[in-house]
Image 1 (cartoon, rainbow, N blue to C red):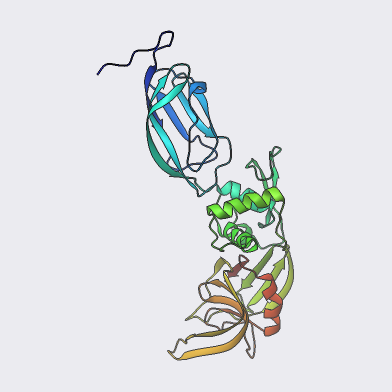
Image 2 (image 1 turned 45 degrees about the vertical axis):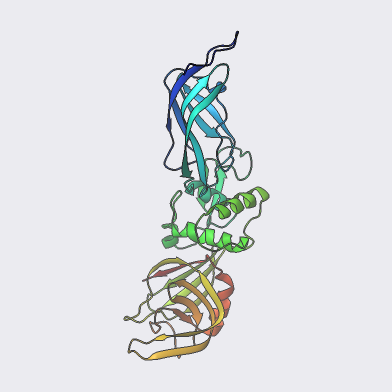
Length: 330
């Protein structure tokens, strides 16, 4: 076969091979793709990089024979994009890709951006002050996070860290998902991210104050409820007996019942079934905050739950929506 003749007055196309590098996970802080050519190629002559789902991009020159593609809109964490990776290019005044192989890459969760959005919306016990003006309220920018409630126990504050996928962040995300009518998974899936960005742009902040529950197993055992950083309620409680203890730690409330029949097996092997247990908030496996009638309170008596008088449970329950953190300390 012979090559087709080049029309009179036209320049012969200049061919170049291309070596494409695509990251293993996409991020708003990294280029989508880097191309290194076998000879110099101008970024301005290249066709747009067509991602699926569609995302506007631009080419930037990083060397005479190297370019990189960057997104001109924010990537949605959790979304998987199909990215064309060219293997060759043919150029006259403009260039066309002569060979392309597709690769699929997911956008990594941007935890710092997640921190920023949830802080701006009031779901975290921290505030966020941007270091520079934001193009929109949802734009990811550098800034300063400040603990908002100095009166909250240090055990909670110690578990918070910028850019760390910690239980404080998980609880905040669950609270946001609940408010948005989403599944309360505590995971930043694409739907949750889209709603976070939309809420930030609309200024739709958390309509509820920041609630927190601290259970101390030091005798006498107590529960303290914090609302908007202030201790507003205190009661004696019972936690788990030695053979079925309440696990120390911090956990988000994940399931609630106004009333429930609780049943199971006692340590001696006998069965129990207790109907009408009121104001139940599960926070760790089968451990829950709830009302339970006892002759006295303040020492281990339960099978892992945090029991309290009916009146106390009624006072606490409105402040333990899904996502509320419960810290249990020895």
